[in-house]
Image 1 (spheres, helix red, strand yellow):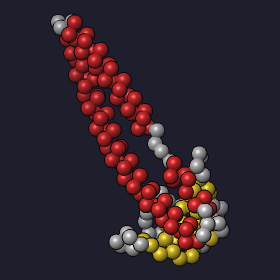
Image 2: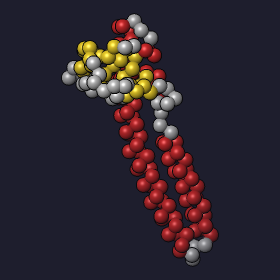
Image 3: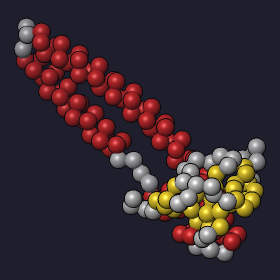
Image 4: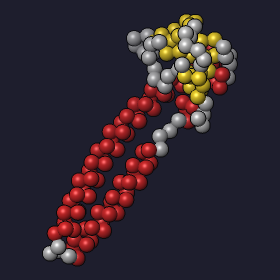
Length: 150
């Protein structure tokens, strides 16, 4: 079973979105160059065909980027809710946030919170505005820990 630290959940980011934006920018530059070549050699249809292919590729990548942006927004919201629960649990138990671990980055019934050596099962109410902690004993040993930077 894997537990994630508070700092890992707060600082986890996704660099693949930046890579895709760089690829989109490169394709836009290629489209500009091909359109200039098409303008200069209007009788040569290969530049027109390349232009159409690149524009279609650009639309495809923009669609993929938009879909991933929506997914990242959903994941960010879920991680934010988990970190809020971790903050409240740390405050209630009088420990530092770095001593609180979660076994998931999404809020759901059955998620586990670990404080030092004690593990708690988190039950989320149907309205999503409150939770209940009950002591739990993990079956799977050993426990793996993911800290910030791992």
